[in-house]
Length: 119
Image (cartoon, rainbow, N blue to C red; front, side):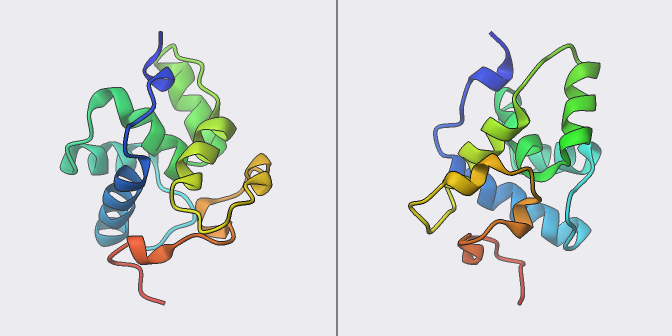
């Protein structure tokens, strides 16, 4: 079993904590680097078993896949990103999770979760 197969029990809380940390420390970006997400996970005390889920949420698909290949894991970026984003979606329709887009481009996200996001 890989770390990616263990889903965080509170995906919404993890998205909020890591997303707010990334915004505070690195500003608003379409995607964050693997190292930036690792640092945010550490600062937010995200358990190592759940780091992959933050990477799926905030890294580009290519960076996610490259990182996981480098550590010998094969995780499903699209499925994991869909699960994480559904935790902060205000829409009951999750069919748009089949698309590979930045988390900032997804419709119906409750951005009030991210303390440092100022529109």
